[in-house]
Each structure stands twice: as structure tokens, then as C-alpha cells.
Image (cartoon, rainbow, N blue to C red; front, side, top):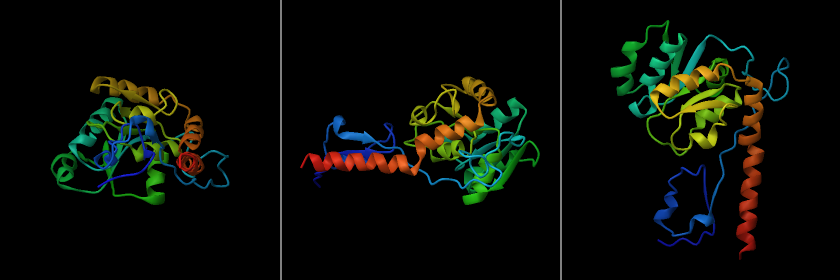
Length: 226
């Protein structure tokens, strides 16, 4: 199958660009456009540039949100929360890995399970957390939950794999790590980050308006080359 596209767009530079299978465009013909997210509507009590569930003083838990697989690092999230002495709330769809490896560790006190959450319930969970733990074990093209947490003003502690360095502004919206030992240090640093600054930075980088503007510029380049 042939491909006549002039530019190929990906969510991150770590995206595998599946379009390579059908065309041989040079790297210079590819561009990266991170996804954009709709604005969270602020409540009357919330100042501008705050999510509906963002808090300056979060609740007493850290959060793991995602699928339960070894590659997502849920066991590492439990280990980190215990080392920090903080309650961990985990959320995601149940599966075989969850039933065999995670459920036996859930005690309702140090480790809790919130089930599968979405929409306002997801935002409430993220916005109330002291931080999101993202201890992935393999590279991913993009971590949507990272941006979702930041838009709630919640810092993220993540392994420095795949698109993570492109999403996390080190020391501003979160901290990253290159090893399991470093991950605990990164998480500890996250507790000191300014949640309002996190929200403002996330709005600037992951808004729908920014994404639409970047796509418009790509289309203009394509049109100009014809």
C-alpha cells in the first residue's frame, strides 16, 4: 500500500509511528503533537487555572490509576507507598493479574482498591491525591493519565521511559527516575511541588486550543507544499 502524506503526526517522539509500515517519509517530515484535553470547569470556590478537583492541600493518599499488568508496575507502586508511609489508592479494571498479584495485598487501610473509575470520579481521585505513581517497566508512546493528573494539579512520579521525559517537566509537574531506587527519591520530591504551578503548566502544554493550533500549522505546511 502506498502513502502520499507529506507529514506524519505522532503524540510523542517515542511513538513507534506505525505509518512507517506504509511509507518511507524521512524523519524531518514527521512532527510531534501531544494530545489536548478539555478544560475542567472550576467551581465557584476555585480560582482560575485550577481543576474542579484540584486542591492545594490534598488528601492523605497517593494514587495508582491504570491497567493491572506487570509492565505498569502496580507492585512497585505498593512498595513505594509503603516506603513513604502513605496510603495507596489503586484504580483500574480487574483482571487475572489483579486477582493473583494485587488483591492479596489490598487490606483496606494501607492499600485500597477503588475499582474502575472514569469521568468525574476519576478526576476526584486524581485531584485528591498527593501524587500519581507511574512506575512503568517498559516504554509507552504516551501516558494520558500523567496529563490528566497534572491538569488536576497533582504531581507525578514516573519512570524515565518512553514518552515520560516529554510529558513531565522535571521539578515542575513531577519527577522522574531511571531505577527503582531513584523512583522513591523522585516520589519524595513530588511532595514539595507547587500544585497550582502544576495545573498552570499542564493547561499551557495540554490544552485543546494548543493542540488545535499545532494541527492547523501542520495542515498549512501540507497545503503550502502542493
